[in-house]
View 1 (cartoon, rainbow, N blue to C red):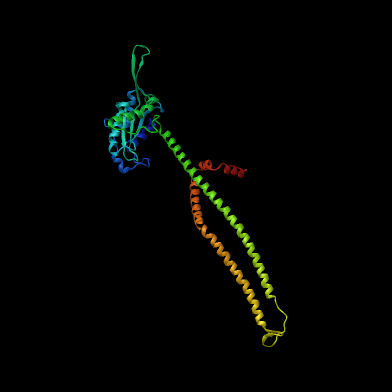
View 2 (tube, rainbow, N blue to C red):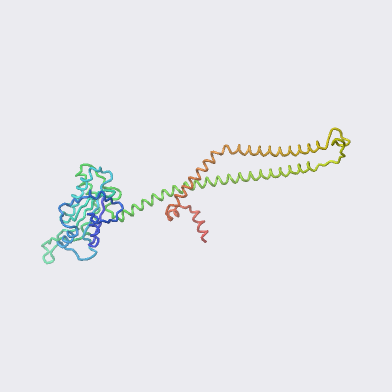
Length: 366
């Protein structure tokens, strides 16, 4: 593809330094100085300094002496991505021949091919000289030939609209096969660098919106799963609270029984050898032993109930272990999605938030 730029006298110096790479410090992060020696100029006929040639050519034709006059035009022709590297030189040569025929060899300033940037491309610079004829005011029957500097007339709407299609036909005829110069950015005519940048930015914004929509959708699904899990846990909590109340009541009842047992102190008169007078075969120590056994029985029963409860609880947990593992993975994924969402620009996040959340936020601001 290709794009065009117009230059006043004031902006030419910067462009000359970019074309021939004479400037040591060029603000271009894509520039690889180790490959600069591979650059070359196809306008081999031009032996003059670029700036000198522009000044001389403007003096040879009619040129208004104003600061805003565009005294130079440059086309940047980029090698198609699908073009084999072995054909780059032939492609740029064909493109140069097309451009010099279209705008006049006598107007060519330079045609540098840059191989030291990410994508090989050519800068074709020329003085936009309009050549034509007009009627003599004193003698209408005579036509006067004129040449003047006019970028507006040389690179007009028709020239821009037909440029890429004409270039493609010329290059394909020269190379003998199809060349993908025409694309979505060039089929409707030339676009400026600013327009191409805006289009690229719009496309990136659309891609970001689409990606953000996916992130929000997945995050909302994760939130729903989390909410369902919270409701399930609340139900489990209610059940556990009921079981705790039952256990507390049982413990209280058991303690009452123990108190009753320990408070049993029958009135009796001790006989010989620790026995009870009037009762055969029963001693005081045996009665105390029976009381201890009754208390131990209550404690054993309590321990058995605890073990039974814990067994039933673990039995319920076994089938849900896989669900808990999945829930943990979902939470990790949700955290990743939330982090990615927070990295999006603020205006995109505001566009993607559910309407309900926006209303709630406005309510909080009030």
